[in-house]
Amino acid sequence: MELIFMVEDRVLGPTLLKNPVRKLVEPRNRVLKRIKKYIGDGMSVLDAGSGPGYYTEELLKAVGMSGTVAAVDPNPKSISELKKLNYGNLTAVVGSATDLKFEDNSFDFVFSNLLLCCVYNYKKALEEMIRVLKPNATSYISVSRSFINVKPGINADEWKEILSKFKVLETGEGITDRWAVVQKI
Ligand SMILES: C[S@@+](CC[C@H](N)C(=O)[O-])C[C@H]1O[C@@H](n2cnc3c(N)ncnc32)[C@H](O)[C@@H]1O
Image (cartoon, rainbow, N blue to C red; front, side):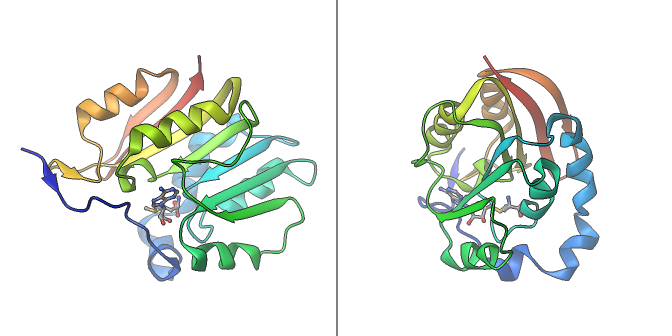
């Protein structure tokens, strides 16, 4: 049975996503070490569903001054927080991953941490993420694990279907999340 929790996307803000407790329960390093070898100097990265930037600054450090990071989130407060970072190579825009305002094949890496599980039309968001990735480019995708079939949310079958759209380079499962580094085919 599928429980429709919300027919809208789960739009979250800085209070929840950038608080000191998060650093304890979800240390950034856990995710960063999964993507470290796939991101480097000069790359163009999209942080889809960036929130207020829990990972965005780390992505900026990874691409260096010759790289660029674009961050997209529907929450204006999160995007304002990001703009305060004041990096010349960061573009932060209010928007939806289901309708990305970027050209086809424009990013070397798409980072989406716990995004698809917050998006009601996650299939459209996934399609958009694939569209903006360059050919053979890589992406990090993670979703929270839900033990009941609640929407928005990604169940085990939907996760398999998401992975089937890519060449899977690495994948793993924690108690609370499923993640993969994938390559556009
Ligand atoms: C669980 S949070 C993760 C945020 C960030 N990736 C992080 O790890 O800190 C999910 C984020 O997706 C955003 N979101 C919800 N619907 C979205 C959509 N349609 N497009 C882009 N982002 C969306 C939320 O506002 C929230 O910032």
